[in-house]
Image 1 (cartoon, rainbow, N blue to C red):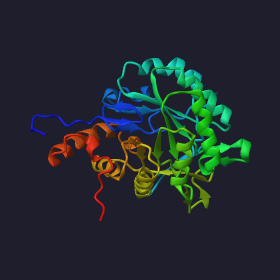
Image 2: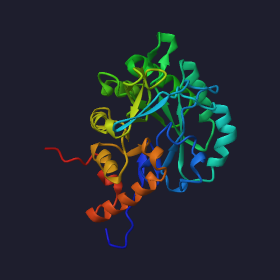
Image 3: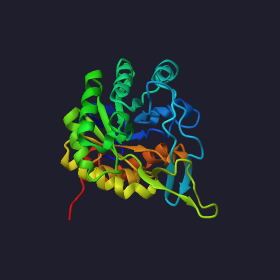
Image 4: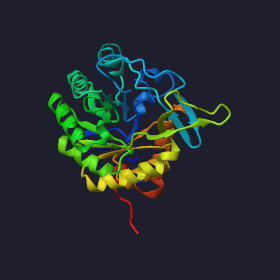
Length: 309
């Protein structure tokens, strides 16, 4: 790479070419447009929306977010405006930006997932679907789809019938073997995997002797879960054979490089956005500097390039 040549930040995930590997994580960036006055949306590789269900949901009662050492806990309860309102009120505004739009899909029954996938799949502006499978399956006694390999395979296969768009399955870390769940998702027709969703945790106020979340337990995110996310990314990328998007505690360009070396083709930035919505722009500048300093012409050359002992 010559001194004048600009590093190539383009990556491809499940057939989707991204201008760079930086996506925003679902649930941390609204539906994208809310941040247009704070962030240069055109600089993002992609925007992953808040989870969308067939009908609007109010979510859990507060308190539903609390800070912890090295991260935060949330129990939002998947509050959202519903797929129809997103398509009619939000999606038109996202058309002016080059960032790829990935819709996060969830439901409590297979049919609910299918309905959202079918509606989103009919929109050419939507590049892919990300399935949040950390939702209770009410048809099977409340067991999360992402905790049962056969239930996950069937869910992904059902959604695959509704849409030809790339399917990204967001794996839960709260299982014995994320690899086994990744294999089930692959067998159902997934095109890529996102590693990882939040880690189940809780926090207690010693003064009041009460939980800090109304629901007692919630999802832990932020720097505290980065080593877990790196480990799952490493294992899944090598054993499942699908592209992986890394998620968990990403705040700096160095974090991104580590996830790419571990096998991720792209990453999602989440909790860091609450502190500084411009984090993706800072990361991108850092990635360009890293590529120049190391003489790496293409960021895609880093994917899976970890040198083992």
